[in-house]
Image 1: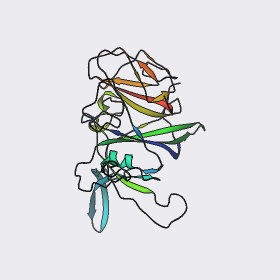
Image 2: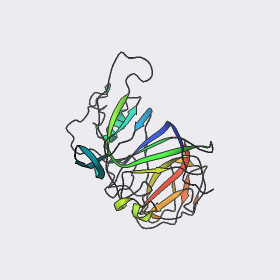
Image 3: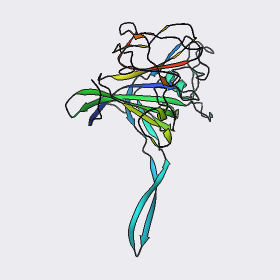
Image 4: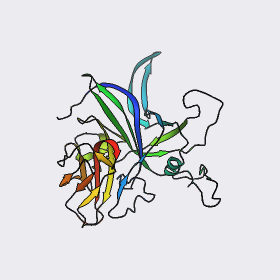
Amino acid sequence: MAETAEKGMVSGVNHAFLHKRTSAGYPMGQLATPDAPVQLTVYGGYKIPGIVGWVPPVPTAEIAVRKAGQKILGQSRLGISSFGEGQLTLSDLDETFLQIIGASTPDVATHTEHSMSSSNSQAFDLPQLFLTVIGGFQNDGGTNKFLTSSYINVQVQPIDTPMSQGAGDNPNAMTFSVIPSTSLRMPTGMLFSAAALAVQDNKDFNWRDHNSSNKGVAIDTYIDDGIATTFTLTYKPFSTDATNITNIVTKNGVATAPTSIVTTTGVVTITPGTADDIWVVVYPTDFVLV
């Protein structure tokens, strides 16, 4: 069934993912060198454990105010002066998450019975990432769905570990500042200019999705070698659709239908392109690993 624009209640937060980002704006999973992917490899995002909450950034607008005779006669918005910062809260100290966002690499080699790490406070250029957060969404008809919200060019500020004598839920939760910027490309790999979103200047800092499958979506990227005809997704897809209706598949940013997608194995069959072609698959799933 075709999906429509809806309104409803957003409730809870269920999943969150980090992806490294290439300089051209493609998601590249957990690859440390996202601009140098390896052929025949599928790159899936890092599923963040312990997601507690997400407060999105609130842009700040410049305002011109017209005053005369001790009165305000009017005012108008001049445009955005800052995108603001988001707040991502996790229940856990997660050293893998910290490494992905730009903290130090955990060192378990120098002293093998110790895991050492640091905040890497002198790092100037933190990694540019995709942050995807998935929460519940109930529409006016009472149907429970999921709302996927992806921030397509962010940097996350590493922090140290809080400690306290507090009790209750998550007494030492970790809250990270998330600094967004814009991208020309959506998480699907497609340019904003190729979609019907009509965003100003064909770029933005976020992308949202709800779908008729009533699922959250996963994002995988596959690097073609020009020969192989199959690759395997990270999670079992909900649908076998191979027509870019339910499962979104792009090659080098252009919607490209695969031959088939198998729900039980996650195998995607394609007509191979040329070496280093970038295939991105955005697919509804229950997040069951293949």
